[in-house]
Image 1: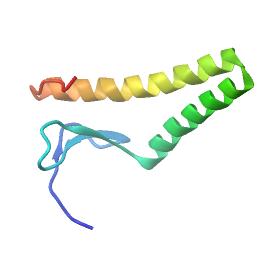
Image 2: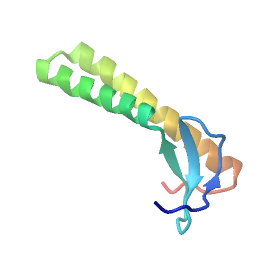
Image 3: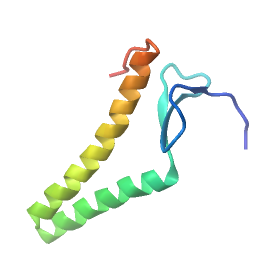
Image 4: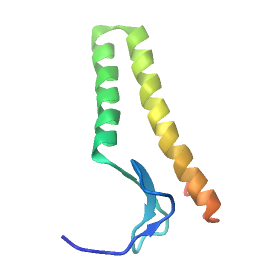
Length: 88
């Protein structure tokens, strides 16, 4: 294991925005339990599609999209607060 210094752009939590040495843009550090929730939402979407259940698939997709939207909003806000342009 290497120990490094990273720049923290948000408070800690389940999805901290950090920049690792040598990287131009920050990234989002997602805690394992939060990553598992996103994976579970994606699995529910696949299962609903396999069953042909469009209502459940839409619900699962909505949860997945909301999770990604929250991560992306936190990321965009952190970059804006620190005067960093978005990489997209």
